[in-house]
Image: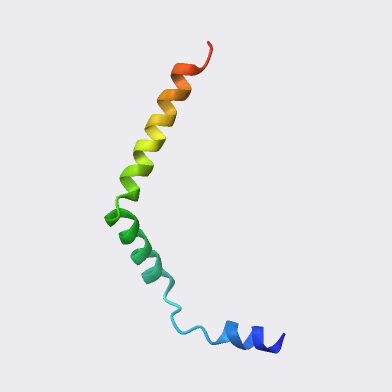
Length: 53
């Protein structure tokens, strides 16, 4: 248990906003953002065209 506490204290990179920005930039630059938008639009249209009423 003591080692777990020491590990939690020894976090070296704690700049959360920088980590979030890097994650977002990677998400956009890899094309996953466009794929997510396309998937949401496609799912919306499929749900609209296949629902009754």
